Length: 97
Image (cartoon, rainbow, N blue to C red; front, side, top):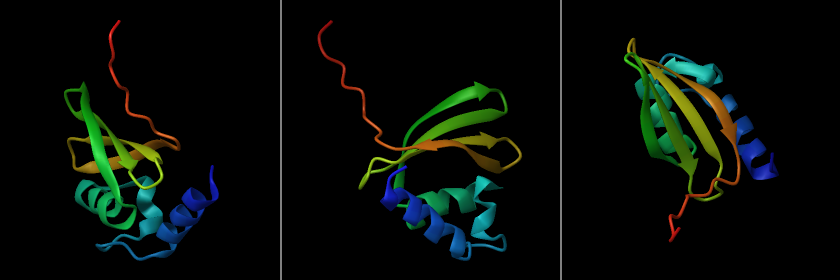
């Protein structure tokens, strides 16, 4: 993990959340709060979404300034969880075969 990513993640865990829950509950949270945190605190944008099963979606979020990425799993009950994160995201460019 690069130092910027580690510092930004540590900083996020110290801030209060946008709602009643604490940002330390970032692993799983209300979908709206988690989305707001990803967008407004971490500066991430959603790059893709897919249906995992009838009640679950998976999303890929990427911080454009440093290419760190997050995979978020969202459930029909309104809960979302960060299930994976990493760095050095690259968009796939399709070229001639």
